[in-house]
Image (cartoon, rainbow, N blue to C red; front, top):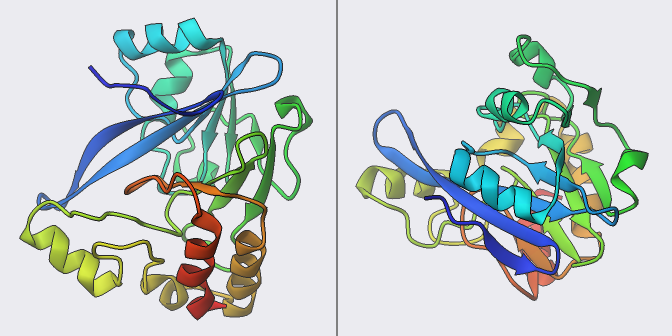
Amino acid sequence: MTELVSLAEDLWAAEHPLRFAGFVRMNARMTVARLPGGELWVHSPIPIDDSLAAVLAKLGRVAYLVAPNRFHNLFIGAASARFPEARVFSAPRVQEKIPSVRIDEVLSEGPPAAWGGAFDLRLVEGVPMVSEVVFLHHASRTLIVSDILFNIEKPEGLVSKLVYTALGTNGKLAMGREWPLIAKDRASLRASLRAVAGLDFDRLIMAHGEVVASGAKDRVQAALSPYF
């Protein structure tokens, strides 16, 4: 059974194991927030079975599903099918990758009014291959990211360690070295990273790696500043 863990008031997370190319292992994290009206906001859904769905139902109604970049959409279709009344929000260019999945709204600068002011968001510009959106949960001062930062302190297996070492993310909070290489507009990427680092947060939740429960702002600034 997938465990939903409380991280702060009205904020939870659950993890699902992933394997790439047969050898590279990591967990993917889904983040759940309860909005001021009591509805649930689900970021980067993982597989949601009956047991996990029942746990969510006790917290509130799943009303919003978020695909935060062009890689964190593997399970958005299944989540939408399980919660057909939930509105599906995505980062730019996700729909062209998964045209069979219903997307109700593409995120842009400024959070949707339906979220009740619970979040701010920033687009990570200049890297259309990823097209990531990051979120600030105001009440808990939590920054929620997907792939701009990893914090896998203890990678599983030799191949995983070698891959993360090559990317500069092995055993630490870091942004992968590949980002500037795949950027189409490095100036826009740098400006976006400065904007993200400048947000008011203390906790960091990322899709891959250990949550930073407090003191995250200084660590994020240190991780991102080489790419400013």
